[in-house]
Image (cartoon, rainbow, N blue to C red; front, side, top):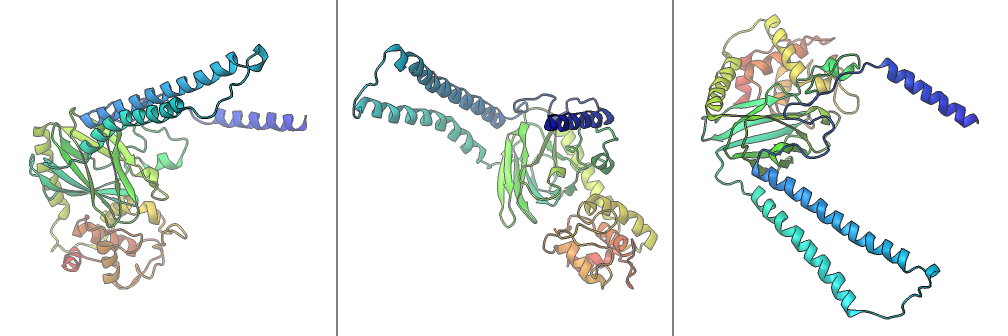
Length: 388
């Protein structure tokens, strides 16, 4: 009786808690998961279709084996039980049975392995790609470099792709979640439709994994190793994936978004992206005021640093060092510049940022919280010199 009353109290408390929580309407995510989705996302590549078909084939084979084995077992139990007068047979060895339980499983395995092997071999053929993109995993974002481009002349394009869901949605239950909550980024990968896209994967810190369900791709990104995969999307649209390896505290916050567009739209994107990169690079010889650098650095910090070092600069004890009061931040400029360009321990390299962005974020950290270094400003020209 005592335990029943406790259970009743717990259930009442849970009901009151649920009643006090806001209920938001949930709808399908364009290019992402659907409400009550039980199977794979709709495939848009031949490989993804093959994977989907293999998945269904394996399930059918497993179901058939389950029904056959348990059907025979239950039939034997019911029809040959002692209560209806049956007596157990007495025999030693049976050549026919031994041949059967060896040959039948062998044929089943061969029947499953042949189509699977064909698909795996096709997945590994990354030759003759139209566009080659290097995807670098880092805690907790993706860096992309367009290495080769036969379609839109996008060689040299480089950018970081970071979760764009507002942090307020992550920390407050009272704020309504967007349709693409936790699966939206500020800089998606853009590729042309019906073209072979090769993805070269690596990582700066720990093992990550680049994958998009609808495209039928998933490839681990391992520090010190270069691996690759490919896809050819046959339909224009937006497709969403995740890092599929548990990579640390914010593993859930590094989604992947791929925009598949027409050749004309892709050429316009590459042209616009190069202009955008040139604009962000600014003039490295320009001398900025400390207020200009702090204002720009705050935005760079929010996009690239806040997940590890926190908005208050106190970091995560035991995992990521505090920037407030840091000897590096309050010390000579060259050491901090070197860490941002080359990385250190769990800290990845941020060479993909422009000279002005690196100078701005360093200046911001040196003039925020309780930091009061003697050298409190870094100009882009210093970053240019440090890169050489």
